[in-house]
Length: 353
Image (tube, rainbow, N blue to C red; front, side, top):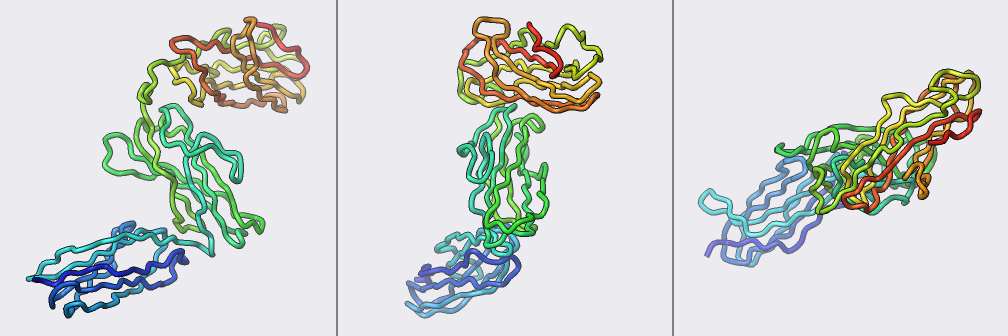
């Protein structure tokens, strides 16, 4: 009977400092007759073979294989052992282990995709499926004994339908952290489905250029692919409105205005999804600085009219702002959702429909 390798134990340090050498060890036993066994170590994250070593074993003999390596990103190592016979390698057992790479003691405490984020440990639950017009939020928490001066970066990787592998689509780096925090939350957001269509993606998190880890995988599905049978459409009832006394012309005071580039998105949308339903370009066409109010209503001009949200901005004469308006789609299967927008300045009265 040929020799046969059995994994007795492994040692893969984690976390490890970026670029600092460390030792990986594996205890192997020959559980059959005298012969040659091999040990192979691969970094599957980088695709690099670290070590391939053979050794002659007596029956029942144990031996510790070891080697020194280093990493600059969180890496998954694959350890394979087996027997070597007549010039061929025959695998007997294998195992994987992750070594977390840190930068100056910084580690990735949490990374996920969700629908919203506001601050440290203040975010939505993990979300792995998004509509084509939904915004994906990538949230991360990096911790260290001192975060001062560290630079956090997010890289967005995405694989469109029909593509063989993901590619980097976008990255964003924050300025160096300016206080001695022990943890930092960061988040980026993007309607990536609108840019690249259906597909799958994830977000890598870096600290000082070191890849600490990444979020869960998420999927962008085409409209109508999430399992809902019924959909809701947005109806631009009343559409865009402003104070009729100014007739969309410059005036005295702080005067609100809506540009023709503003628009409602008609859907259809899936009930319960949090999506962008309108874009409003509004500004101040008056002659003084003042607050300009942009307000979104549902069921405008009807008895059940209700304010959904508003944006009040202090604007100088001639200033404009683009507001992307997002709301949760109500459960109105097969029906339209009437919406309307009003814009007015602080020297005007709220216009009627």
